[in-house]
Image 1 (tube, rainbow, N blue to C red):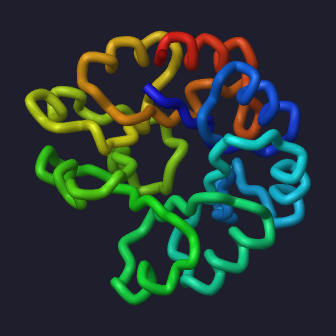
Image 2 (spheres, rainbow, N blue to C red; image 1 turned 120 degrees about the horizontal axis):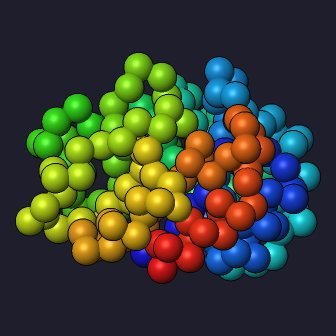
Length: 194
């Protein structure tokens, strides 16, 4: 499975994740998050990164102009949208994007089944709560376009291989504390996901 390390707040964590084999890094542009980075911080990190790594900008309840401007300014290559938007918002984006499904039920995971999408367990807060989704919901389902998030860490990620997910996404499961990654946990997570 491909791996995304989300909630990157500093260059050291970013480059360590890349050297450990991460396919994507996530940068949170949601001010209420303890992993929030502003455009200057994200730009400073991203401009020093090597090529062929997806740089994902995470947004909550934001308009298309802000998403476009932020992604262009910082050098993000993909937007991750943690909110339901009108079609005109999606149509106005000038950057590739993925929708996030905050699943409350098994039926929810089938939303946007023709698109690549990130599926996380529903909780009142947006992202990083470490709540695990009911994995049984994914049995006998085509998971090839699903990026699974929520409650993952190096001890449980290898058990997901049989489900055929496109990728896995982790943040709190590889942290020392909010916004600071544990490099050994990152290495172990990526190793166990492969």
